[in-house]
Image 1: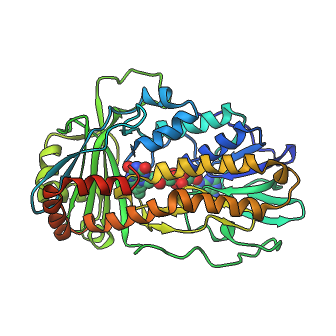
Image 2: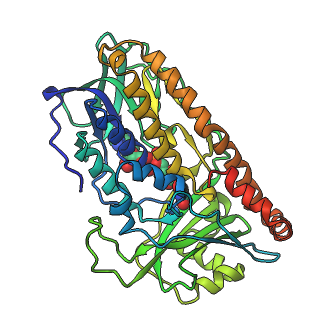
Image 3: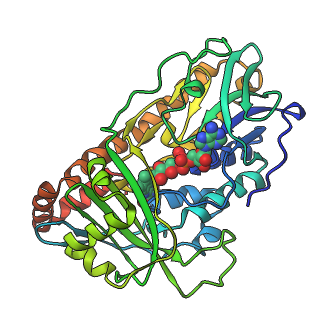
Length: 417
Ligand SMILES: Cc1cc2nc3c(=O)[nH]c(=O)nc-3n(C[C@H](O)[C@H](O)[C@H](O)COP(=O)(O)OP(=O)(O)OC[C@H]3O[C@@H](n4cnc5c(N)ncnc54)[C@H](O)[C@@H]3O)c2cc1C
């Protein structure tokens, strides 16, 4: 959907090459291009494409989107304002609590990832970023005297840039993440440390005919499985948000985070869906008449924790920098916010970047800003998620939160919403 151009690495060199065109890469590219930097994005997949995600965006995320003038365009394709969270534990009482009131006129809303990612990347192109898509990058060399060389698969020569932004959403691309010390093929340091258990696999499906109020997000689970359900817009949303042919068919997103042992036992998303419906009364009720509108997608493992923010001329954004537990619904906001922060930092240091020097100073400023803005939110979110993931604890927690709803509000605030 974005204005992709044929890859011709010799045609140009860039101030910044962004690898990955998901929310983090597209936002970073958009904010940097807006300040006049010469930016390119290399994205391996054709858009629109779906992605495993709960698709919940709190007001803080919508504020970043509004800063890119995207709130009206995306708002037309998004679900309605989300005002309540229903907690469905396997055992113990159910809880329904109000989400904190909308801030600055922006409420939490959900939006399908095919729409969100396409329109964000399109916006980066509108602001001047050059998009290469579909282009898979398999190696980054540098920094050398002249900056970085980025090697797309199938291209005879590398693309050149003064700095590289890694927005590939993964901790596992060792050769790209490596500090090369100027040595071309060195894979350098080992892949980023595993921060989570690595035992959680994720699934997602879109559904129709769900019995859940439009303004409510349901969270909860059963032994070994956590689920989140919400209205995400309309059925089969078109990547062009202006298309309203499916306007009247409410679309819901169900995301599952599942212990690997349970995945081995049940084998597929459909079987896990049945397990959830049978053993959780709240989800059983909501999904009794539901129909799938697509296939189950899966990804994993999920590995929450902070990874790398800056290393040797490489700036990390989104999940490549740090992953927040899916349960918290904060990952998109962190991805968008990191893109916004990077745009600001790069713009403040544009002279140094243009001269191809002092990347370490720019990197230190970015790392400071990142840890300040996102570090504690990420840790609080990941700690909170540990409580809700355990069914027994979850029952205890909901009973406790029933008695003290202010604590729930506080948890929501700590985790960034
Ligand atoms: C089950 C689940 C539920 C979630 N629910 C929510 C939620 O409700 N709300 C929320 O805010 N967050 C949620 N998240 C988190 C959210 O999905 C992520 O935080 C977000 O996708 C991170 O964005 P990103 O741009 O860093 O990475 P990604 O979205 O993974 O994008 C990375 C992009 O890089 C591209 N790429 C990768 N490697 C290369 C390469 N070598 N060359 C070129 N391109 C490449 C990929 O194709 C992809 O498009 C959830 C996650 C899971 C797993």
